[in-house]
Amino acid sequence: MLILIAILLAVTVFCLITRADKITILYNLLYYTVFIALEEELLVRGVCVYLLKDENNYIRYLVPNILFAAMHLFSYANWGKITPVYVFSFITSQMLGLVLTGCIFQYLKEKSGTIWIPVLVHAILDYMVVLNY
Image (tube, rainbow, N blue to C red; front, top):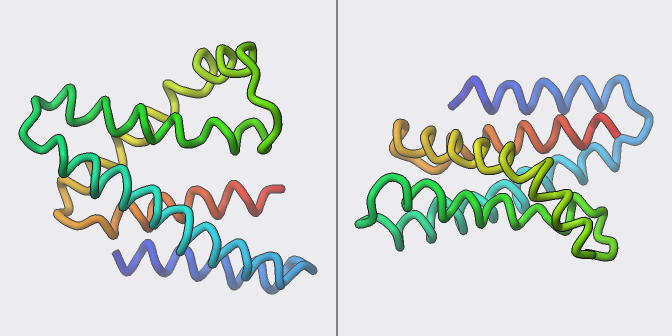
């Protein structure tokens, strides 16, 4: 876990040194680590998985992670208009990758015994994506 925190901090320090928009870097760090990653992981891997703890593995993995993927529908549309064509495009092009990513996060939670590992991995991935914009 310390390695993941070190990676997150190293990326932040690197960006603070090399990029001009330092306030945006710090805002994104807080927003994507504290709000987005923590909120999504607590809701999906905390609450949903807990509610499905007595179900078989297929249900316990698929239902929360389909919800996880669906939570990204609006952000992938850049908070624009959601049309049936866009929903079809999202389902056919993005949904499977997000469900698989969610399953990996859930596996990390189950193997580590803590929700903090998937929260940190999720935060690092989100943070790195945002820094590329």
